[in-house]
Length: 355
Image 1: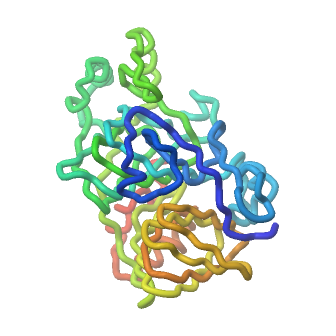
Image 2: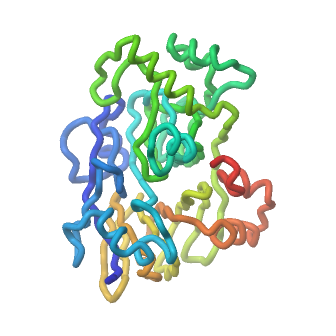
Image 3: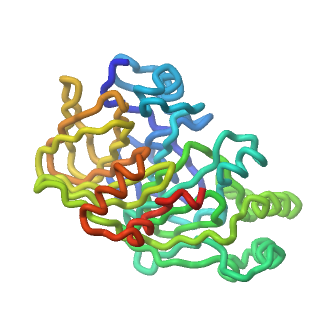
């Protein structure tokens, strides 16, 4: 494989909870002049497959390139039906549906899908007093939960958490959740589009869902619900590496890790698995494989594993998503900074217990 930073096409979702936050607050350009709920920055989801737009592989889908070069694209020895990471910018100008995504076991047994969807939200902006719903209150019976969902009394059974700019929430598959209004997030997750939701309307167009269909949806949701799961907003853990860069570990688990970098000047970066770079600030310049690339504000590049090293130049902020080797990429760097095991484990699912 000729490894170079890959620019991808941008599937869009126009769900009713969206608005113009991705354009006005994030500063992403080139979008249609209409309500946008989600920009799928890196996607290998059926029906929303990204296509390479630059270089030798322009015109190939991410799926085709991953299946042709799995070791070089993802990581040596990697096996899977598709590229394993999905990333989005999500505009929750309005409330998202109360919903959940199956974990791997439920996805395979109930949805006939290869994997479920664990995700994490990094809060890019939230209005004062913004909040989210995440998880089920303790000691409730399934009948109490189902009845409240049918009655749209979500706060009676769900846990409401404050949402602040800069926090990150780790949401395992099977956790009931919602966020919005007035929230803008970056989401990293397993590659999947399965979900079950409890709302009386369709998120695609807001049209009404009949009572029998709603009951069927909620029954399917209840079959995949994992009511004991909990989450807490995390401010992240700083890794001071050099004077040129400060890394914030936002979250980590068996399916993904997410960091937010502040770059002061040039930075040499070596890596041994795929990386997703999404820029939150001024344009950054990337030197890789003998060529130079510019990553503009709110733009994303996918770095194949075989690229192995790059040089960043510029001043700004960058989100970096990847498949972690937990010990090497997460536990050891944080331990060297003096964080204890309990603090590190709060980053998400360090021990793989919430799969």
